[in-house]
Amino acid sequence: PLLGRARVTWRDAAAFPWIAPPLGSPARTALDAEFAKACLPPPAVVMESVSWAANRTIADQSTCLFVQSAGAFDLAARAGERTARLPLKLSMMPDSVGALYAAPASASVTAVIDALKDVARRQQDPGE
Image (cartoon, rainbow, N blue to C red):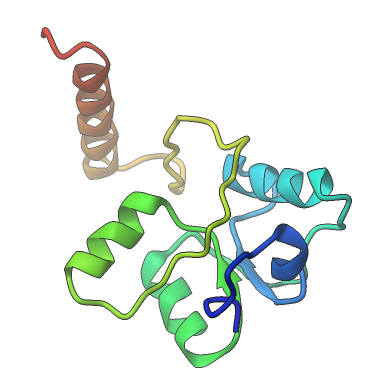
């Protein structure tokens, strides 16, 4: 329903249920902050998830909204997935990446996290 509108606001988005990032996560804090800036209470959350696949599946079967990075939407669109972005941004979203895993981390989880840190370091200092 929101995609056909010329302009979409956080007030418009508040009328829909959300699949939200977990409470306390940076993305959830940023989402709640956008609603607060618009003088609105946090949205009604039907499920907490950061899984692109789960979010897309649930959103495909119901009328709800979810938070996802622009990069993930762009990749999905290039892959031919039926997806659409609203013109809303999390202005307070930190430029960091987090990893959620069960402690203690296995050797494979540690290897993936180390690889992500290495890529992030190289992106910050391309001269390496």
